[in-house]
Image 1 (spheres, rainbow, N blue to C red):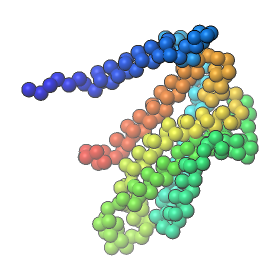
Image 2 (cartoon, rainbow, N blue to C red; image 1 turned 90 degrees about the horizontal axis):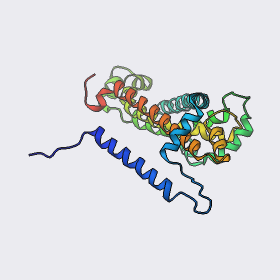
Image 3 (tube, rainbow, N blue to C red; image 1 turned 180 degrees about the vertical axis):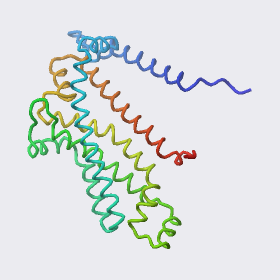
Image 4 (spheres, rainbow, N blue to C red; image 1 turned 120 degrees about the vertical axis):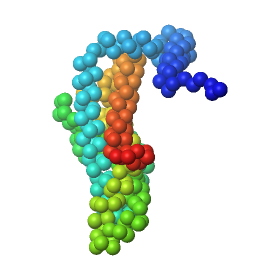
Length: 265
């Protein structure tokens, strides 16, 4: 007789409750300064209370601007990555140069690029998106998309490529008819990973971009005013937004490429 197994939602719920309980316990024991009683890590009720006190408008105003910066950077970074990846297949000699560029963008710390980008792009006007945040968002998602796209485009079935060649199709036709279709799962997986990366890049760009609206400056204000519940509330909301974007692209991936999971279209 087979043993009873808890459903996935029950296991996830138990894990979430245990994590919150551990967080609560550590907040009231380990992370309390015994000298002045300052609590560096707030309890879950304190974070919930901060959401109520600040209100929806506070989070909506800050997150909308950061999401705008992340979205623009996401489009630019991924568009350039896909364009260069396709161009490599047309001119294979450029693969080394493109990969070197991608590796450099991944290896150079953003904290080193941020101040340079601010000097070149400049500070935005009040309430306007930060060019530095957009640039760092694009930079954050460039590497993963380039690697995923190149792996996918080069993994096309050789027999299908030969059929296109026999019927007179060139490299561009092979790219359009065979390689792009075969590469879709890899490309969409790369685009999915790029979502939280772009959001993180936009938030970091706001730290350098001298902006007064957005998730980045809101965190700075919460930190400087010694308001751990607000700071944690912003951090948790940022994680939820990034996770939601990641999940949406994941749903798109499953809808667009059902064959990648063994399902008929």
